[in-house]
Amino acid sequence: MIGAGAAGLMCAIEAGRRGRRVVVVEHNRQIGRKVLISGGGRCNFTNLHTRPEHFSSANPHFAKSALARYRPQDFVDLVERHGIRYHEKARGQLFCDGSAREIVAMLEAECAAAGVRIETGREVQSVARADAFEVTADHDSWLAESLVIATGGLSVPKIGASPFGYRIAAQFGLRLTEQRPALVPLTFARDERVKFGVLSGVSAEAVVEAGGHAFREKLLFTHRGLSGPAVLQASSYWKPGQPVAIDLLPGVDLEQAMTKRRATAGRLQARTLLGEWLPKRLADHWFECHGGSRALAEMGDREVASIAAGLHGWTVTPAGTEGYEKAEVTAGGVDTDELSSRTMEARRMPGLYFVGEVVDVTGQLGGFNFQWAWASGFAAGQHV
Image (cartoon, rainbow, N blue to C red; front, side, top):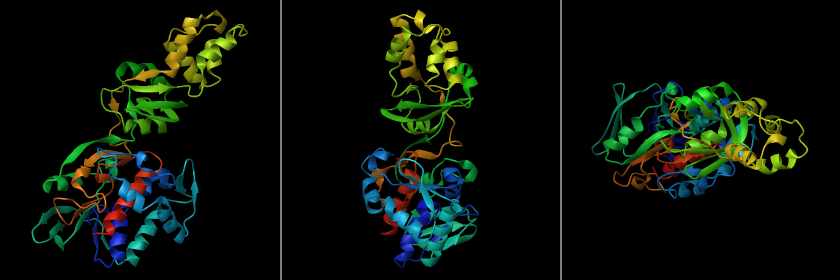
């Protein structure tokens, strides 16, 4: 097995429990590097509300089988057996009370109990297949009848992310879907960066929509563009050149509110009223960018309607994303048509398996990608 991340370790544990002799080869000196940095160091290890619609793929049905056979509660049971304390942060997102190191220690202990051997700091030079798979790393080699690729995607290169898994898939003739950064901040084009960069650090609740998917969560202005959970979620469905639609006042009928207040507003400024729902810096700057604020009582119906439409329907066409350095995951990867959804085995190369992020299955923000790692690793581990 190549890769000692979440999916690889889960697969190794399950294969080891079945009596298989398992060697995990990892190029980092430490296992579970991405687990350790996730969730601000507390690891959002699953989401209790995991459903297939929380995942995107060229084949939206592919993930269903694995997700059905290894559910969030199965991983929670494992966490509880190891005495790891955890809490639900929001909408089913489970985090460690302490540190993500507890999850890595748990996986390492389970590997040891299952007789799994882990080789860290070993850079794989080649993978070949004759009568068996031969993996060569640092002048050593291993022969195996089955090989699992659990090397992740391209996101967070500072912890060793690489296209290794995609190269192995291509080497054995498997198709790939286009890879791109996902769960990633979006960047402004030059004019919007000049206009809105001064709002860096300002956040507000918003509905952000891209590619037919909308998310209501926090939006954050940065000096280069937009971030925050709502934007990260939408980024997974955004394609270059497409617009992103933003409602800065979800749940508020601004036109109605302004019209109602207009008769008794006196000298109340429109931006002051807007500040009842938006951060003051954002409200003030919005009017500065759109001709300035006036007294609400002086505004006509068409002006009120125009202001409301602009805030409820702000459209931005991003220049791009912050790239893999800031992306939490990689969208795209090994084409799911090449794999068995039940076992994760390559249809045209028996004995070769792909699990986790290297596969074209991408979860939304909130613990779903870890649940895919556990589920896909478990599926392969039951069969490898």
